[in-house]
Length: 338
Ligand code: NAD
Ligand code: DAU
Image (cartoon, rainbow, N blue to C red):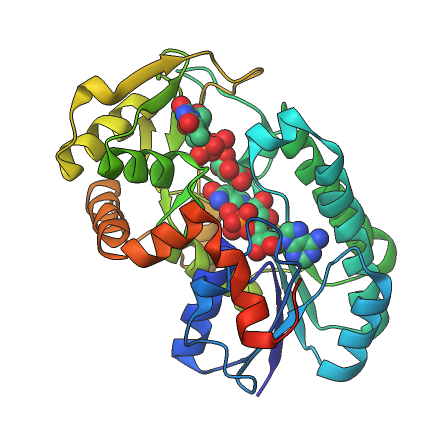
């Protein structure tokens, strides 16, 4: 059985990916995660067995940790998701984004290359392409990179390092770029879980600017299937875009959340806009469909309703995230504090 190293496996997308892999049982999985504020081992409750799915606490910036891991785990391929992922945090402080997303990716590439891994899948974002006007065609893999936030600039930097390792060292890497994910286990700093939890608790819903920014919503399960298709069928050195055909105004997403939760529209607060706020993202996923046979299976309406219901029925998870109690999980289960 092949071994996959999943970096960032305790985060939102990483934990959904590991859960999917554990259910399928085709791969042994080793998770490497630094357990920053965004890493939550409760996302993987019942999934980490130690044998089929193993958890390693460590950072992609830690050269020694990486060397030990590759020396002991016989990693066949890497699925690289670890990152600082929140745009607002990158506006407040960009340095951790450069450290993790650029330096960390470089160190991981070097360690994976030294270990001779078969394939390295780098999970990137549509935000590297910049912003679109209302009538612009959707991003393709050939759209020039024009990142606008410190977050997207750091992701673009990591993409360029991956590209350089392919070109210079002949490493077998694939880059995926996808639109906004939603689904279970997303940290409630991002639009959909934040608005859902606030609506359920009767708290104000902060809508940035006029709320008419457009995001192209993709269910996390569809993204995870895409990552695995890129691993198994992608061509070395290629980029694959994943999008949900799910363009919606932010305010329409917020209204749908209010309707599903039964909360009142008076909770909406229009607040000061995000500096440099990208107006519209939209993905053209034609290449992934034609080369990988990938198609999103969830519609935004069905996926959003199921996601809101998931947060409503997983109140213990929500409470622990809101209170910060989730950060005690590692100490409780592994006997040492972080
Ligand atoms: P997340 O913030 O929920 O999780 C990130 C995970 O990485 C956390 O578990 C965190 O502990 C871990 N991590 C952070 N720094 C680390 C380090 N130095 N070493 C090891 N682990 C570290 O992020 P997410 O939303 O799950 O995103 C996963 C990846 O997908 C990121 O690379 C992100 O850029 C990309 N992406 C996300 C979206 C989205 O909508 N969420 C869309 C496109 C691309
Ligand atoms: O497009 C992919 C990207 O999507 C990923 O690469 C990022 O990791 C991920 O965080 C996400 O970035 P966004 O900035 O688009 O996501 P966020 O959930 O922060 O915001 C979505 C939209 O909602 C955006 O236009 C800002 C707006 N927003 C967000 C928050 C948190 C609000 O209006 N109010 C809010 O409180």
